[in-house]
Image (cartoon, rainbow, N blue to C red; front, side, top):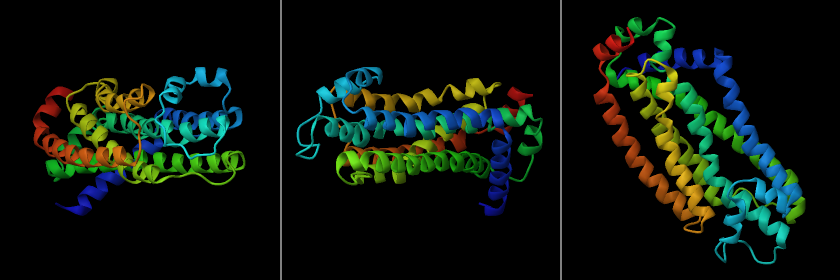
Length: 270
């Protein structure tokens, strides 16, 4: 594998994403809602019944919260803040890299066609593995970058607003470090690889983005599982999910590389 060729492709694709203002807008709006608006409302309003009813899944989640997962000695407001900030928001945070990936990776091949650069790209010396790897890395950088930046903002909001209410720092927890350092990149790689694969067969970016739903579904299952009391997104669940995703990512990437056919892409997009 030629590292220089891959880096050249990564640099080209990354710069094209950064120049696409329409793509950047939704990438920034949703994370702001998740990392600023929701935690701020939860911390400032605490156990307000109207707030708990307005955030889908929070009320049943609190009603089904297993005993022993929230520190002893917390009042009602502190219990709500701790449970929502530490547990409820963790799987929801995984939606951020998937969202970013759905925007950036969808243009992997379809975007090249729209810019009339697809033929030139496919006739370069890049091998199929280098081509797929370059496309994945180019989308992985903004996906992980936005998620990690969002985590820093989330931590600041929680610490500044929540610290005085909780009587001290309580975030981040070990589970969140696993989410940020392991699950975010692994989820992003899976979403990007699947979208890149479909992008080679699609004629529109909307069609390529549709496959991101397959990655969102397991995340939604985690959210629903918490809300219904079937499971809690704690450290062990996060570690098991990371192990499973690592295996799935390796398999999916290998299958995507094998499925890439330059002749078919040119035929479908020509």
